[in-house]
Length: 419
Length: 146
Image (cartoon, rainbow over all chains, first blue to last red; front, side, top):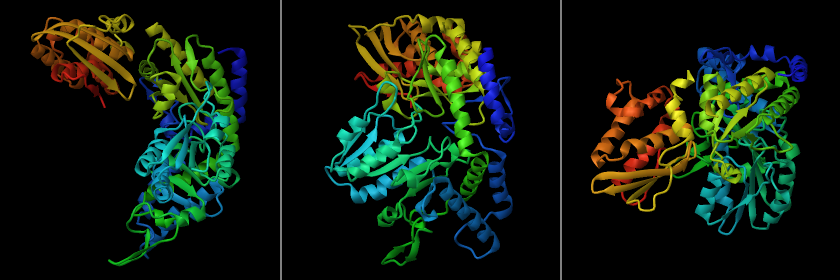
């Protein structure tokens, strides 16, 4: 590493005490194949701090009971802890009320809930759904299924060589038949930050609703669903340092009230007879069955943890780290970054001339470096860039400039073996 | 170390794959696809009766899958259909079990390192799955390792 990059690295590491933060993540303190773990796969799932691990453990050790049911002490404690997460989620997204927040398994279920419940009721033959060229499969397939069922049409906003959506093309796609615009806030394969506020405004102007897939955005930036005026916004707990199997779907109250239930079962009802069932209010109308209680409580701890570090501090530090990584990788001959949008977060996706990403991934793994290789559940993105797959390093606030240097050294090793 | 996986012969065959070309007079063809990696492979066989007279492939894939296809084509020429299918079974056993390495695998033993990399087994077997499809189903099916 050059003296200059040393200074930059020392500079921003000092402002943001990353060494102290890393102490919070037990998984980071291990060797993989004899080398210190360099975890660069947080876009797939983020690591968990002690605060989250302890909250889940405490629930199982001390408070474990089913929620919304018993009058006994443990049930009341677990209900309170679980519902407290909804209050924290409200602060996290700045929704008007906590009742606009539905707990789901993750982003995928959040999108499926809307496409099934809202979609089945509101989309008719000849209607149109707009998505973008950089969507994750989870924001493509549910809409495709809906369009097939309803004989509706799926339209796709194209992008440019940098991986930025073409808003003038988007404008042309919008028409009175457009019912829903569903786009990612941040692309998981490219790192592009989409101008969702503008995208939502344009959708509304055309009389359509907008759903934002926030899975890759919420770990990296402040999201305010009221400022965005999003109709639906969804994300996964495990990408914000919480456990898997829990996430949040935000929806505007009036939309949620008008939507039919997603699944039937316990907790989502008010009264049940064999003749007729009346449904519970939102959000419970959409939460059938015993939920992931431990997951919800763990996600609550994750909200607290992020708030304690400060989302603006996280964003500023990661911005520096991404710039450092972009610069470092750009200097490697034969390496091409895939996704070079002017507004980016967290993701360094790349291909190397003549070397397949899976070989890169395996050689990096042997040096303790964890990256994702493959199509990242975004095959249309790969097709657009004309590559079968990429290698993706994705960053979180616990990563360091030294880890970027380790990645660069790892890539040199890859080149030695395969050149 | 990583060289257990990427042995010299594997690197050689991945950089300079043998029998890597289409075949106009093939009697059987099949396509293989690994959706996880995006690896694609097209296999051409020229059968004379029961004998594999010639075999070639085209495709794009990682070092392991390219080298595996290349070494497979070398090992198949002159074999009967049944011998080829038996070799496939032995190769699969080499990759997926802890059984002692068989000597009759010839050069293919270089893939024994793959058994320590479960995520890469599909790369090494793509060509062989495609072979099975070509030998057992004459209608150009696309096989998938998923």
